Length: 294
Image (cartoon, rainbow, N blue to C red; front, side):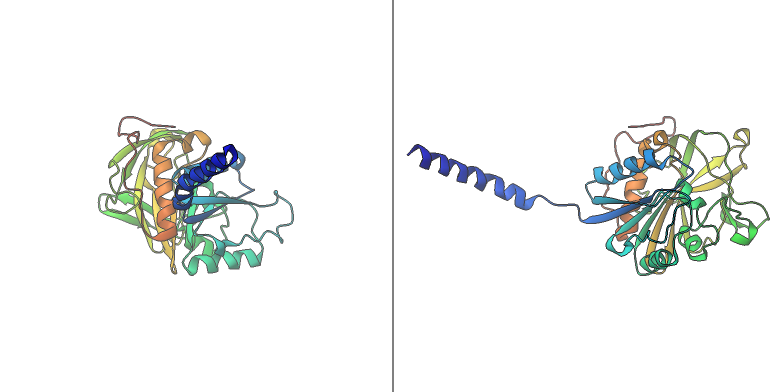
């Protein structure tokens, strides 16, 4: 009898636990972060990018790390098509032709992309990559790469004046101004909010085809800036694919800004699906006066 009683107790526990296990939802979306070469500390930032996506409860996340600088990249061929979104934390050697073709095909056929900070420095001579990211800096970019994009009183301006692509002053906290409060990535956010100490990218230029600016930051002259409202959050469409591009995120501290975290989480979901289910704005989201970090 004691043995029988134990067995029935075990069955009862299993019956209680089984529905919970059966109804527990695995994240529906798959993300891949590409890193391995960068003039920024990808070893420190990739874990944060992975954690932020996992914290949304929407993504499982894999990481594809390239061989180091100077190594043979002919075998580095991430299977982009296995993922809903590819997060680029890479700025280094060009990939092999097979990997480049696979990436372009993936985006053209509907894949999602998130460009984080220095990933827009990469591949300056790769035409399709520059179309996918919209704007980039450094790497010899100039007026032949495309216009500057600025926000002025008249709205978005395509500035074709000659000059280098890409610059920034010293790191500092700065105000983000939302320019489209109706987009799924930005809806409900404060129209102005303070981003944590970071590089403020300016003078980015590129094809800027099918680009939609969501947020800008004022590049102040007293911070060696351009005196222009520079795009810092924007989307790009390429074929059937969607790109969310954030110029924020130079360092782990910058990536701990709640504004960075939430726009990144929403941006990744939008790039993956074209929709955003993350409706509730976090109560600790930064204000126009106060930086907020986690």
